[in-house]
Length: 124
Image (cartoon, rainbow, N blue to C red):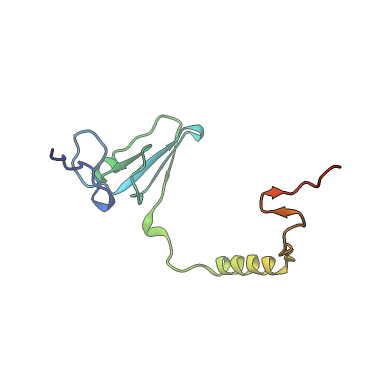
């Protein structure tokens, strides 16, 4: 028995999920129904069952229901280096953790107890 080739290969070679389109997908569209929001971002690392991989043509022609919000993530708009505020926030978080007192657990288990079992003394 020969296997059919997968029409939607994983990785960067995934195809557009629109019917009849054989173009390579470049972005992923996800709907958040509870918030009436559509999120359009770069192609996800793995194919998701409830997300749509779109080619450039379908991404630009995409429409959402009236009243919905579209959040578009621009991959080129992110910075490679953190800002000074980001670094200070990380430093403050590390300092806060260093100030907290560490409570050590006793190394020996309780007398009469081994793991999840407990020894019950004789009631005589």
